[in-house]
Length: 266
Length: 167
Image (cartoon, rainbow over all chains, first blue to last red; front, side, top):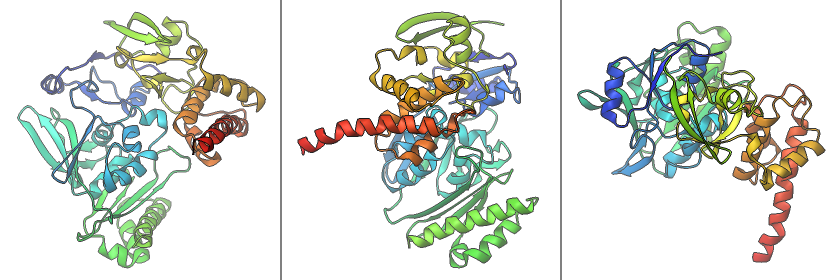
């Protein structure tokens, strides 16, 4: 259980980080997903770039109705209310159910999203928000809509020489309703089906169905799901290609339960 | 393979060593510093046996590779002498038969101390949930959960009268 040999570097600034990615280094943040994969030799990078010490990598800032969460903000910080307001309440609830506290103490929101494991919690939840991922590359920053960020199994819209710098989410009114359901046989285990529904007052409700072994399915108008949860959850889950019957049943039930949580708080 | 110079504070002592980047903190603690109280079980972050306090919070030492440890402050199971919460937990683990083979115990104790300090109001269900990242194959957890609850209850008992006097 030892990784294949790799070289280690710790870039001091963002320019150095991008330069390391250009030279082919594998970026690592909290290392809670890539760490096990290194030990199991599922990945064998020649070089690792440790992003944890970049200035402004972690931390949360509010400005003009937008909450900017540094990519290196840990799950534990979010669980412990680093993000204020209703948005923070919702994110804290998600964070608390990620793996285990020792993993949450190290693992980061940006690392998890960029790793793009289909069963990962932020991958499943963030596309519900009308926010963006802030990527930094040789040409500067660009924003990618969260709904378009994860493109497939461990595949994102990031270019090879881009690093995920932050996640920007709109702050939410106190009346925002939220439903989230995740199927794990044991707390902290990889999800077998995750669904969430976000209903912001005055906006079209949105939903995500994830842990499908591929990119999450973003339902940009979940009005029908909230109007007829039973039928619509079945229709959506059955339309996912390649799901075995039991996985489809879990997906359908997760969607139905997430919708019910929103309807119960109506 | 080029070795990295790693400077850490381990159990309040400054240490400096050379480590291969692919080695992990549990290797450094056990192999280089001979602190064999930290146990390695699965070595891929699942079993929790190797849990140590890293920069003030529990972490998996088996998936924390050497480079990430440079500049870190580490406390292993050997480093809790004189810690009142750990002393109470050790006593409670004995009283409640919270260990049999003892392999998971160092990680359990580090995690249990975090639960007691971070979640003073935790009930049994929450304690079980919080312990779910530490595997024990002997006890069935009953004794471990009872030991953590015993310490939580005792601390709540101590806090209770004082709090009501203040009110």
